[in-house]
Length: 179
Image (cartoon, rainbow, N blue to C red; front, side, top):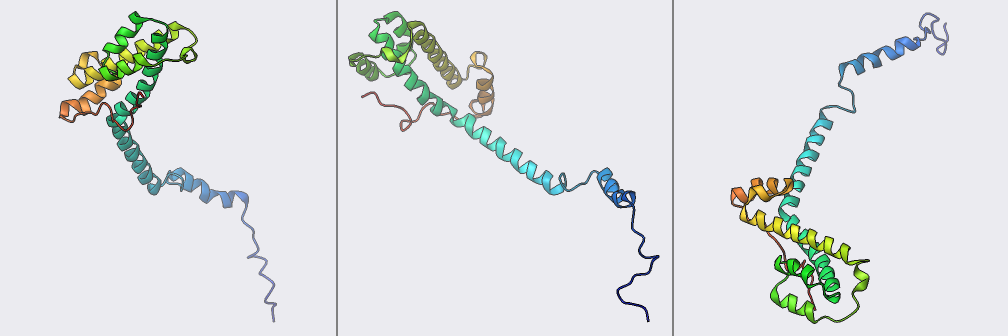
Protein backbone atom coordinates (compact mmCIF):
# COMPACT_ATOMS: atom_id res chain seq x y z
CA UNK A 1 0.00 0.00 0.00
CA UNK A 2 1.26 3.45 -0.93
CA UNK A 3 1.83 6.11 1.65
CA UNK A 4 -0.78 8.83 1.99
CA UNK A 5 1.90 11.43 2.53
CA UNK A 6 4.00 10.72 -0.56
CA UNK A 7 3.03 12.42 -3.78
CA UNK A 8 3.39 11.06 -7.23
CA UNK A 9 6.74 12.27 -8.71
CA UNK A 10 4.95 13.31 -11.92
CA UNK A 11 2.59 15.53 -9.91
CA UNK A 12 5.49 17.18 -8.08
CA UNK A 13 6.34 19.31 -11.13
CA UNK A 14 6.72 22.82 -9.79
CA UNK A 15 5.64 25.64 -12.18
CA UNK A 16 8.42 27.91 -13.36
CA UNK A 17 8.58 31.62 -12.65
CA UNK A 18 7.30 32.37 -16.13
CA UNK A 19 4.33 30.04 -15.66
CA UNK A 20 3.38 31.87 -12.44
CA UNK A 21 3.76 35.41 -13.78
CA UNK A 22 1.99 34.75 -17.09
CA UNK A 23 -1.56 35.20 -15.72
CA UNK A 24 -0.51 38.43 -13.98
CA UNK A 25 0.86 39.86 -17.22
CA UNK A 26 -2.32 38.90 -19.07
CA UNK A 27 -4.41 40.56 -16.34
CA UNK A 28 -2.43 43.80 -16.49
CA UNK A 29 -2.66 43.95 -20.29
CA UNK A 30 -6.47 44.00 -20.02
CA UNK A 31 -6.35 47.45 -18.39
CA UNK A 32 -8.91 46.48 -15.78
CA UNK A 33 -6.68 46.10 -12.77
CA UNK A 34 -7.95 46.60 -9.24
CA UNK A 35 -6.58 50.11 -8.81
CA UNK A 36 -8.49 51.61 -11.74
CA UNK A 37 -11.62 49.50 -11.80
CA UNK A 38 -15.20 50.74 -12.27
CA UNK A 39 -15.67 51.42 -8.54
CA UNK A 40 -12.71 53.82 -8.55
CA UNK A 41 -14.15 55.70 -11.54
CA UNK A 42 -17.48 56.15 -9.72
CA UNK A 43 -15.69 57.54 -6.67
CA UNK A 44 -13.67 59.95 -8.81
CA UNK A 45 -16.89 61.28 -10.33
CA UNK A 46 -18.31 61.82 -6.84
CA UNK A 47 -15.22 63.77 -5.75
CA UNK A 48 -15.30 65.89 -8.89
CA UNK A 49 -18.98 66.67 -8.33
CA UNK A 50 -18.32 67.55 -4.68
CA UNK A 51 -15.44 69.87 -5.62
CA UNK A 52 -17.59 71.51 -8.30
CA UNK A 53 -20.41 72.17 -5.81
CA UNK A 54 -17.99 73.51 -3.20
CA UNK A 55 -16.46 75.75 -5.88
CA UNK A 56 -19.89 77.17 -6.74
CA UNK A 57 -20.66 77.78 -3.07
CA UNK A 58 -17.31 79.56 -2.62
CA UNK A 59 -17.93 81.73 -5.69
CA UNK A 60 -21.29 82.71 -4.23
CA UNK A 61 -20.17 83.51 -0.66
CA UNK A 62 -16.66 84.79 -1.30
CA UNK A 63 -17.56 88.49 -1.13
CA UNK A 64 -18.81 88.51 2.48
CA UNK A 65 -15.69 86.65 3.63
CA UNK A 66 -13.26 88.78 1.61
CA UNK A 67 -15.16 91.97 2.50
CA UNK A 68 -14.76 91.35 6.23
CA UNK A 69 -11.04 90.60 5.80
CA UNK A 70 -10.55 93.70 3.67
CA UNK A 71 -12.47 95.81 6.16
CA UNK A 72 -10.05 94.84 8.95
CA UNK A 73 -7.17 95.85 6.67
CA UNK A 74 -8.99 99.07 5.74
CA UNK A 75 -9.43 99.99 9.40
CA UNK A 76 -5.69 99.59 10.00
CA UNK A 77 -4.84 101.57 6.85
CA UNK A 78 -7.28 104.36 7.73
CA UNK A 79 -6.03 104.68 11.30
CA UNK A 80 -2.39 104.64 10.20
CA UNK A 81 -2.87 107.23 7.48
CA UNK A 82 -5.11 109.39 9.69
CA UNK A 83 -2.46 109.44 12.41
CA UNK A 84 0.05 110.61 9.78
CA UNK A 85 -2.34 113.36 8.53
CA UNK A 86 -2.41 111.87 5.01
CA UNK A 87 -5.82 113.21 3.99
CA UNK A 88 -5.06 112.82 0.28
CA UNK A 89 -4.43 109.08 0.76
CA UNK A 90 -7.47 108.64 3.02
CA UNK A 91 -9.94 110.27 0.62
CA UNK A 92 -10.15 107.40 -1.94
CA UNK A 93 -10.50 104.90 0.90
CA UNK A 94 -13.32 106.90 2.48
CA UNK A 95 -15.06 107.27 -0.90
CA UNK A 96 -14.81 103.56 -1.69
CA UNK A 97 -17.91 102.91 0.47
CA UNK A 98 -16.04 100.45 2.64
CA UNK A 99 -17.10 102.51 5.67
CA UNK A 100 -20.35 104.23 6.53
CA UNK A 101 -20.26 107.90 7.50
CA UNK A 102 -20.72 106.93 11.18
CA UNK A 103 -17.77 104.54 10.97
CA UNK A 104 -15.59 107.24 9.39
CA UNK A 105 -16.44 109.70 12.15
CA UNK A 106 -15.68 106.98 14.73
CA UNK A 107 -12.32 106.29 13.10
CA UNK A 108 -11.52 110.01 13.00
CA UNK A 109 -12.09 110.25 16.77
CA UNK A 110 -9.80 107.33 17.65
CA UNK A 111 -6.63 108.34 19.44
CA UNK A 112 -3.54 106.22 19.85
CA UNK A 113 -0.29 105.10 18.38
CA UNK A 114 -1.08 103.35 15.12
CA UNK A 115 2.46 103.46 13.73
CA UNK A 116 2.98 99.75 14.32
CA UNK A 117 0.45 98.81 11.61
CA UNK A 118 2.84 99.55 8.73
CA UNK A 119 6.56 100.10 8.38
CA UNK A 120 6.17 103.12 6.07
CA UNK A 121 3.38 105.20 4.50
CA UNK A 122 4.01 103.70 1.03
CA UNK A 123 2.94 100.25 2.25
CA UNK A 124 -0.25 101.70 3.71
CA UNK A 125 -1.02 103.62 0.52
CA UNK A 126 -0.47 100.47 -1.57
CA UNK A 127 -2.79 98.52 0.70
CA UNK A 128 -5.38 101.32 0.44
CA UNK A 129 -5.15 101.22 -3.37
CA UNK A 130 -5.76 97.44 -3.28
CA UNK A 131 -8.81 97.89 -1.05
CA UNK A 132 -10.23 100.60 -3.33
CA UNK A 133 -9.65 98.33 -6.34
CA UNK A 134 -11.45 95.49 -4.57
CA UNK A 135 -14.43 97.72 -3.77
CA UNK A 136 -14.58 98.91 -7.38
CA UNK A 137 -14.71 95.26 -8.47
CA UNK A 138 -17.52 94.52 -6.02
CA UNK A 139 -19.54 97.48 -7.29
CA UNK A 140 -18.90 96.47 -10.92
CA UNK A 141 -20.10 92.94 -10.16
CA UNK A 142 -23.26 94.19 -8.45
CA UNK A 143 -23.94 96.48 -11.43
CA UNK A 144 -23.25 93.67 -13.89
CA UNK A 145 -20.55 95.70 -15.65
CA UNK A 146 -18.82 92.77 -17.38
CA UNK A 147 -16.01 94.75 -19.00
CA UNK A 148 -14.57 96.07 -15.71
CA UNK A 149 -14.39 92.66 -13.99
CA UNK A 150 -11.42 90.36 -13.57
CA UNK A 151 -11.58 86.69 -14.59
CA UNK A 152 -13.21 85.44 -11.38
CA UNK A 153 -15.64 88.36 -11.45
CA UNK A 154 -16.62 87.52 -15.03
CA UNK A 155 -17.29 83.91 -14.08
CA UNK A 156 -19.40 85.04 -11.12
CA UNK A 157 -21.26 87.52 -13.31
CA UNK A 158 -22.14 84.81 -15.83
CA UNK A 159 -23.14 82.28 -13.17
CA UNK A 160 -25.11 84.49 -10.83
CA UNK A 161 -25.80 88.08 -11.89
CA UNK A 162 -26.96 87.28 -15.43
CA UNK A 163 -29.20 84.53 -14.08
CA UNK A 164 -30.88 86.91 -11.63
CA UNK A 165 -29.20 85.55 -8.49
CA UNK A 166 -27.97 88.46 -6.36
CA UNK A 167 -24.58 87.90 -4.77
CA UNK A 168 -24.22 89.06 -1.14
CA UNK A 169 -21.61 91.74 -0.52
CA UNK A 170 -21.25 91.58 3.24
CA UNK A 171 -22.76 89.92 6.26
CA UNK A 172 -23.04 91.93 9.46
CA UNK A 173 -22.01 89.05 11.73
CA UNK A 174 -18.66 88.78 9.89
CA UNK A 175 -17.86 92.49 9.74
CA UNK A 176 -15.65 94.00 12.43
CA UNK A 177 -17.10 96.75 14.58
CA UNK A 178 -15.43 100.09 15.01
CA UNK A 179 -15.79 100.79 18.71
